[in-house]
Image (cartoon, rainbow, N blue to C red):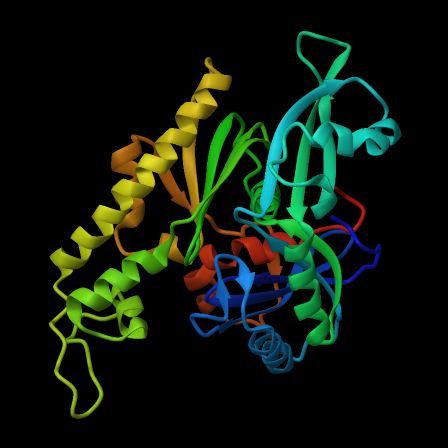
Length: 363
């Protein structure tokens, strides 16, 4: 959803637990990562994709911009969740201009909201395989109140919201830019703190998307309860960053030692439920494309970095699982960025890099 046509965008991924910012310079030959950074949010600042504490979110964005010394003000960000509908539809063959005039009428059949309450965009995919009088269209709708929330918080941070994208398409952008020999069907899975985004692409074109309200925070909460530790300490345990006893504040009861087998069992229990959702999505995809096979899963997001999760996901789905690296085909300004740090957090940076790589002149 393009509001203005301005250049020099910065990508801003506003997650429920972390804000990620990236600035990418596009030259004639290369894309260069100039700056990248992350800042944590309080747990209740954003709940289920809704910004509950806009002042806190805008102040966090301002702090991140100041820390990174970012001068640009034009921003691409994204939304996801129950307030966003992505649907591949079939319509009568018309010109793009004609479809633009009629898109609200077409959208009414597929959107469970009043069309007056949503922003609608579309992309013509191509002619129908068996009917030359029809064509495939990717329809996208997002509730205006969500768009307004994100636009307002960016303006509070003295930024100019130029592009409001969708997480699934930012994910797809990274795949297109970095995985150049992955033809066929690939499942792009992004697991955040409170959501899992599924985007199955067929020959670099999105064929199926689904957002599921589950994420890494479920694992963290269970670990915190089991080991009687803080949320932050539980998060470190989930990511395999600590092997010692969980520390507590002076005077508090000591938590249990984070037994690796217990942690793996917690991760496994949630992985099984996530696999069930993923399997349902894959089965639905196969019902539409009966002769297709999904080749592999490319995994991203902070929740995807839970220790042992990728191996469990591979075992449960019988598919190869690869962690996504958004920096494969991008040069990095090493004066401004720590290479080792970027390697460590690469899966978390995917949507942000996808946003920062957006061109204002593409759908």
